Length: 186
Image (cartoon, rainbow, N blue to C red; front, side, top):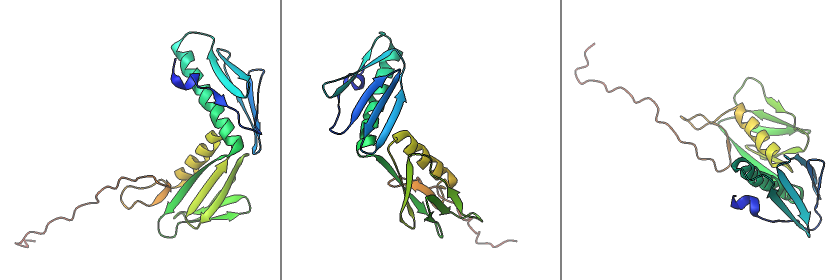
């Protein structure tokens, strides 16, 4: 068994964790999250702590134990503080703006790209070139950030595109100029 699956998760004040009918419900100040789980994993909530236990001694089940432990931890963090990812727009004329709840991005296409936020996700534009994706569900925040990044991937020659804050882009050298011979023959 792994170490992650064995850890005890402390339930902070103001957070409610319930296990019923093959689902885990976590309710907190920022909202409610629901996650289904397999019956091979037993989830116990007692004395302000959450435990994940294996009912079958199997390597696959041990991996699932760690997975569900991490998912529950992310749910608890999500309903208390939430998650956010920041993206930078790098390029001349690249900018973002809010149109109501929609995010409007101009990244070199003939038209601006508009994105509707899915349920549980909020967009914010910190500056012309910085987008913040916020939400309680870590998976949805990461997926929405990836969808926005796919609109204009960072290209390796000039480094233009949409990237995560702090992402390192490996730059390629462009074509080398051909050396002109001294004879100048035509």
